[in-house]
Image 1 (cartoon, rainbow, N blue to C red):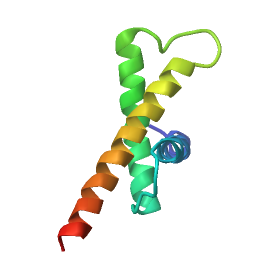
Image 2 (cartoon, rainbow, N blue to C red):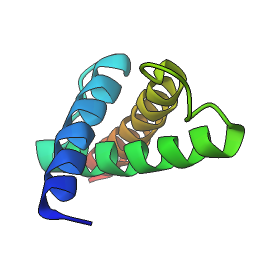
Image 3 (cartoon, rainbow, N blue to C red):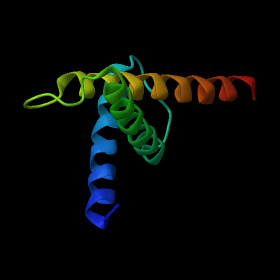
Length: 91
């Protein structure tokens, strides 16, 4: 992977993480760096899932792949925010 590929992955991860965070209702008390990490992981997993289901190689923009990535990011943000929220309540 090149430096350009890494930078692209970070930018895409940030966008996917932000979209995932917007989809989850309520306020999420997680730092932006964690949203970035969740977004990068969701983008990678979404691409793997799209390739496994055969929808990654389409003409034009891959809307289904993007949907997979955003849904995975939303799930990741909700899980991390839920775990962090429960930790704060029990203190």
